[in-house]
Length: 244
Image 1 (cartoon, rainbow, N blue to C red):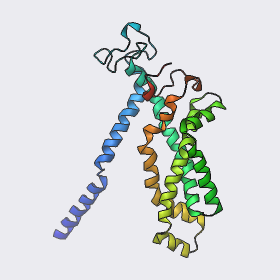
Image 2 (tube, one colour):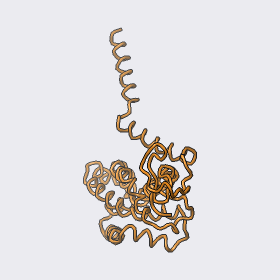
Image 3 (cartoon, rainbow, N blue to C red):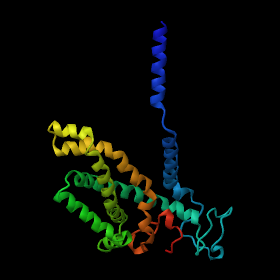
Image 4 (cartoon, rainbow, N blue to C red):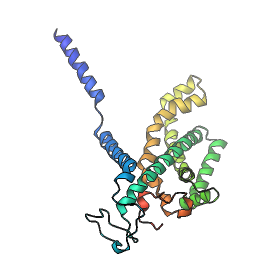
């Protein structure tokens, strides 16, 4: 009877432990959820129209009427931040997805095939890194029609070389591990080793870099002039004070 109760108690503790989420995950998820809710509800909760001019309230400090103050044209900064938040989130998550989808496979291939293919990939990456990000983004956008999605593509392409180098660095360290050596001894093919053995172990390090750098993924867009956007409201929250 006592053993049965002990087993039941142990099982209950195991269930509670499995349902327990780390505090950093809960806090981070709550912060992201708040930003997503604010971005989704921004146009409806903004205290003023984002493009409303009030020259008598130019450069007003933060206060009860304007929580974030006003810009050089008297426009409410909080309203403009809320109006630009959806574009900032779309920009960051879209560029992150592109850099992961393209950069991670390239980094894995460059690490596994360290011959001509690996050299070709890494020298191309070095060439792209040598170009300033803002210049590369302007070059991509200058030859295409203005569009938010093309801007996301341009920013994602800018960060593909960084993701490729990070993934290659992590994968090179995993190639000498015992589980990779065992997979080669079993006669597994390159595709299996890369995507079934190396990728799952490198994924945590690969995905953390763009997530931590999410704010910087939309930073190159802050300096782009308005003609590159087809919608005049397409302002990221970080460029709320920029001129129209």
